[in-house]
Image 1 (cartoon, one colour):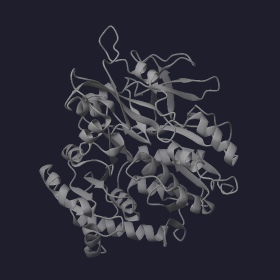
Image 2 (cartoon, one colour; image 1 turned 90 degrees about the vertical axis):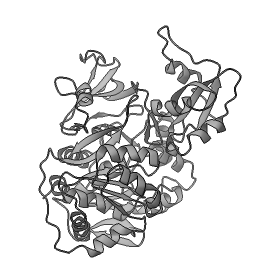
Image 3 (cartoon, one colour; image 1 turned 90 degrees about the horizontal axis):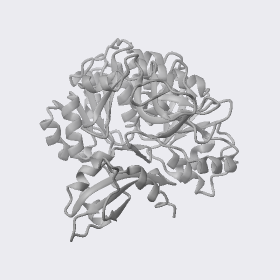
Image 4 (cartoon, one colour; image 1 turned 180 degrees about the vertical axis):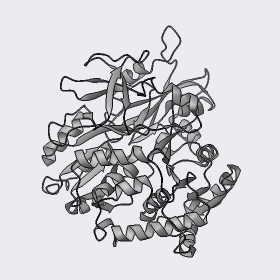
Length: 503
């Protein structure tokens, strides 16, 4: 049996409910049967062990089952953000070389030429309602057309694309061991059991919703209330049925904006987890005052899944991301030399453990650059250890912006802005935003005698970038600040405009 699937389902009860979605109730026994049917269709479509299956679809029960079925046939799951444009998808498909691309039926006509150009041999569709050509293939596949495929811990289970501040996106190779070990650790330290009901309102093209939430719940044999998206009213309506919730800071700030979100409503909840973006101390304090509970903040990356967590028992300290997970080593090092530094000093966060990815797909040189000789992965995040041993994030060395839980890499946005008429140069930064954690912000210098408006920039980027990457505000200046070496001073810009979204 595939290593990841075997370890995630080792202790589940067949008759226990797994997914609760609207009027649907899917038990673990039914999950086994449904994923076997999908797996048979994947085999019929030519998916072999090690083959990539690229997926860009709306959140659905069938989409989640497709992930598990891909693992069962030994395939490598490649989830893609539903907001990615055709231009962005073309690169991912060309680089990953999937044998199968599954997309939304509404986009198939537009994406078919892109898939064909990228050399994808098979395109199927799957809608949020479970219908599409893949559903037809599943219905037609022989019921005995699937045999469980054995995979080793070091075999790939997924590829997730993440960018740097320069160059093209990189595919992080995630192994069965990476995902299984993380789920096992999180289920233990967050006290998940078969009695838990997880309120799942996260997207499933992202580490947080697909791996952290789903795999952890699956390992514990619990149930999930599977919502198509985050909707304040629906989350509040279903919360009395749940025991736990995972979300991004935006979820919690929006819940606090509703008068219906009360201490009585949350009385049956034992755990609220926040991640994917920094949780502001203000939100942490307001949540505790409203509910009497403390949000548990943790820290992870695409390449590592979860690295640290505030404790389940013990202080959950605002402004920190807690302690390393079991079997995970974290150190703070000098960014240039990799030499460990004293607690309290700011340096680059480095991590080593079974959660750390195998490397970047088809990029051995880049992989070598991101690891120390002793095997520690250089996260690029800056942080320090406080007197209680908790990790504190001080900033991101590579100017990554995390808005609403999604990564935005400034260089990609800046390159497109700089190409717009009238723009001399630009700097994209993240600024504190009560709803999104960070608001993507562009500061642009315009060419003499020209005028560039915020609407001009946003219109110029539309269609080339996913909506979450497009700046929420655009500030125009005469010149961007630089140091003596000519480098744009983004820290100075962040300080100047830190209150831009305060109102």
